[in-house]
Length: 367
Image (cartoon, rainbow, N blue to C red; front, side):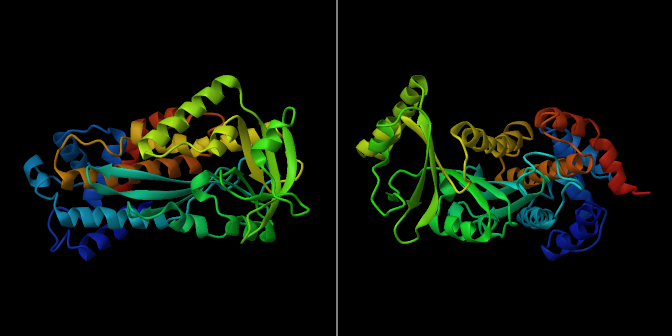
C-alpha cells in the first residue's frame, strides 16, 4: 500500500502527464486525498476533499484543486487503479472454510458506468485466502475474456461461477487438472448417459421422485464427464422463475422455449465432485452470492458510482478513487485477519472508515 500510494503514484502522475513539473501538488497527495477521503466519506464535498488533501501536507484552495480534474487526471487515476489491481494481498493463514478444497474461487463480472462511459471488472475471489484478482476490462468485452477466468487454479481448488462462465472446454481441462467445479446447468446443452445415449433432462427429471444425482456426459465437441445433481423447485420459486423467464422472452421479443419452461420446475447443477448430494450442491452454489454481495458493497455502500458533480471527468476520477479505496479496505481487513463469517462486510467497512484518518497520516508520516 505504501509503495503504490506514494512513490508509484508520483511516477504514474508524471508518466500520464498529470504532473508536468513539481509544484505543491503531487500525484501521491492527490491520490491519497481522493482514495482515502472517498473511503472515509463517500459523499464528500469539494471543501472536504480539499481539507483531506491538506492532511497529506498539500495546502491548496478548493478552486485550485478543482482545476486539477482534467483528462490527464482521469488517465492518472486509471493507471494507478491498474497498479493497485496488480498487487497481491492475502491472509497469512487461510480461514478453515471447507478445508477439503485447496481454495474456493468465486468468479464474476460487473459493470461500472457513468452515463455512456465506464468499465467492467472481472473479479476472482478466493474465499479461503481472501485474495482478489481483478481484471479491468472494456464495457463491451465478453465476460469469458476476463484474465481471471483463464488464470491457472491450484490442484484441488473449487471454482464457482454463474452461467456466464459455463464452458465445456474449460470444465474438461479442470477435470484433467484435478480442479473441482460446480455450475448451474445451461439449457440447451446436449446431455448423454454414460453409455452414450441422449438424455432428455426435463423428461427424465419429471419421472424421478425428489432429489437425484446422475453421472452424465455433457456436450458433443468437448465431452465432459460429470454429475447432474437436481431437485424439484418449490412451487413459489417455480412460479417466480417462470414469470422471470416470460418477462425476459417478452423483452427479447422471442417465444419462451418449451424446454426452458419444463426445466424451470427443477434446480439443476452439474459438477465433477463425486457423491455430492443436492443439499450440499445447493449450499456450495449459494456461496457464489458472496461475490454479488461484494459488488453490492462497492456500489451501494462505498458508492463507487456516486458523485456530487455532473462533470464526467470528476465522476471518473472519484469513481476510480473510491474503487481503490474499496480494495485498500479489503487489504486492511485481510491483514487484520477479518473473516466474513464473523463480522459482516458492511460492519467491517464502517470500522475501517472510522480509522481512515490514521491510514492517511501513516502515508504522510510512515514513521
